[in-house]
Length: 415
Image (cartoon, rainbow, N blue to C red; front, side):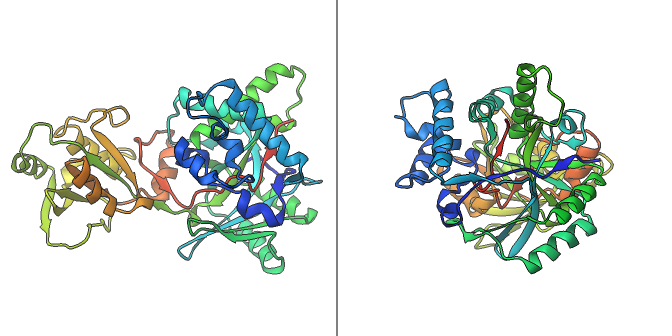
């Protein structure tokens, strides 16, 4: 069962929510974060990317950075920009992107459920990347940003949420600078909160969609606080982390494309001949980038030409939940054996272009600093759930989720 609880969120005043909210900490670099927050004293980037308050020579991982994050968070609270709700609630968070809607529940979820595998993962994490969020969460004494979770669609939960939305006005309703609409309803009805709590207890598993490093960091902060509170009972706030939980049918996964710097010493003709051993290759006469329309097909941009690639049946095993992924098919049959990219996590010759940037970006990279590009068909949510259920790990850069959860609209205090 899934342990999902209401909580007392710290959140912004209605009139300041749009100005305070920001994109997640990990979708921009330091200079981009500084530019986004420029002239906006309310920007929540002062909490999740507090290095923007220092000169660029300051190490962004020094203790002073995390102390500044806590100082900024406390200042927002003391000045009434953020306020804590008086009673525990669930919250509804709806996002709309290009007419597509995803609606989830903001809640706190059990650290123990993550540790014992009831909240399932599909990616590895890197300890060095965890340290930064561990420090941010620990010094702020808060989950300053949520985890993006999913679950297999539940009709009763959907009905309860939709019925509430039908008869209540939202507290926040704004469109951010990236064109995403964000709508937020606190559920201040105890009866509905109780019903949601019971219904989620009937959900077998939750799945991490996006935010594996934040989840791992949250768990480690919890364990650290348990060490500091030896007589903890298990119901303290630090035993839970903040999540937004969406039904699987709402989730939108975009393509995560590849660009490679060179052909590993091959001429274009030699390269194409090798590709044809595992793929059916067709040269396309197009004036625009080629976007694959079904699984096991790929676009390839080489020497100012687009090609379509279709994986031959003997190039993968349809019964292998990892091997049948398109990212695996491309890696196992082309990137590794032909281009010599054995580990895409570490090889400097490969880069990745997320779908939100558009596949036109692949052509741009090939005209700038890359030789060949591959457009991918998106990994499906069914693939993700199947891999997590099999306790397997997806290859790197398999999924790109949009829209991103907005940070600063809700915060969970750990003490």
